[in-house]
Image (cartoon, rainbow, N blue to C red):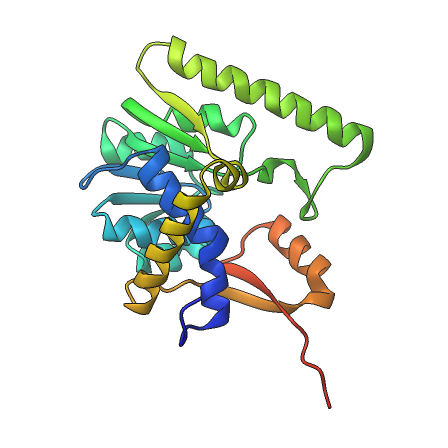
Length: 241
């Protein structure tokens, strides 16, 4: 890590900003002037997409709660209150023809609803499993395994449907773990580029809250409950001499 950077901000780049950067430029291959929809836009990955999307010259919309609307607006997005509005209808009302790319970290049937908000030739980039979280954790034991297998089967159908159904509206998966394993050089290159943007103060991670490692469970539960604006960071506990 380059010297002089805030540690909490720098650690946010390793997951949230690399995820956002690669989904924008590798998965969706966005171009200046395109329209995008970001689900959970006030969260850690969502706020990263907003900042990087602003640098890329995108027109951005973001679903969020009323509490996160101001953060989305401040980062250059048009907030859509998912608790009060149907985001599919609202996107078509605002754009007329839908968006070019959607970043969906919710999963499950929500992916197919996202597809309905696309314009012709658009792409849903699906990542994460927040629809599978219970109190910040994946369901465990036999029921948890059944649920995950069901999610994978549904996801496969969505990907196939995106290619086979008319409209050329694709659903593509993204996994930072797989990409890091398969293309470690690209992962490192993207992280270096993001450190450079942070040093130039062109991006600034939103830190929602910092927890000591001993309170990791509470941090995961808070994340799983939703409504968090920015990134939750775990920090080592200070040793008192």
